[in-house]
Image (spheres, rainbow over the protein chains, first blue to last red):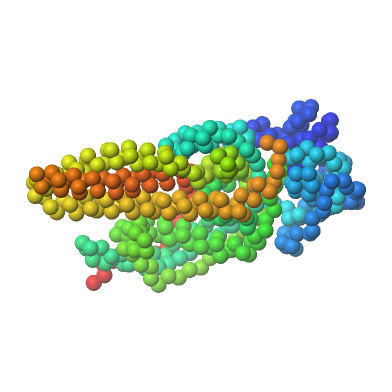
Length: 410
Length: 61
């Protein structure tokens, strides 16, 4: 998104640190509200923005996902042939250039209607702060390759991701049957309700749901009314998953939250499960729910590509809280070293313990050693599987293309 | 003597298996950055809690 300075016709961008619109050329600044008034977006005359001659741009077909019941805003959509970026430009601009590759161009190609987000969480972190956050997190990882820790940045993209925010009232009643070895079976009957607000569900097909969920939590108390000025200087993605498609997921999530609260009140229930085994069963479940509000919102995230060996590693940073999400590679050499180090500590301990058990004839103690070993192996296997799954999700072509398809100058 | 040999064989085997498990677990903890942590509390209306309309506990006989 690109906006023009009313003072010098330079490029105006939203500065997360100052929380103001700032001109990159003359330093002029204004709040987003003041800027919107100056631009007169409310009185924008569509005739004024009629399609003009375009050089170096190609048009994009009207998106199929646009729905009649949503609110719309008038924007001009461009596709830069030089760098491949897709731009939304406000209708009041007279001329501009590609905000990502800097290619000079002549105004818009056509006016388009885009679904207008209702709310937005503006970026709170600058690019530098996002990188500092990554560095801080990586410093803690003893298995992270040192080359990754050096943080050779390839690309940084600040993207507003599309989300649906759901407000839901849910009530569930059930009987929880908990089995214990010592005291037999207990029955807990519960009828509970709760209202969940602003449950965030990502509305982009390309963004893996598990990965976007790991970016949470967003502080939804910092949501503000959407203004197009916030998009200046950032990429903004459009939703391609409808709110209808996410209703079931939302209810499922609210159900999980409420059931979790219910199980917390059942003393003999052990919520931890081993595989599919648990010590409780839910019976006679009844449910009612009401989705009270659904809003379209944009939430901020940095997508950072780090150079590593011959490839690139994708790291995501929550643009509001600075939470870092990544599945980093490992080096076989480093893992071997760690294994040797662990073995050098573990082997003498186990040899001594075994010798003690054999000498004293405390053979049942072997069961404790075996159980401990089983626990360690299970932890290792599940950890490794989780790692492999996360790595697969992060490197999925849709995830990498989500950020890589947008070329920029960084 | 047999105790020493057995202790070395069993102890080494257990030590190596535990070291492997520990390494794999440590690697997953270190290299999976930013685990899922969104909790119900993040979405509960400010000042509101889960309301229990009915609650009863009994032992199955």
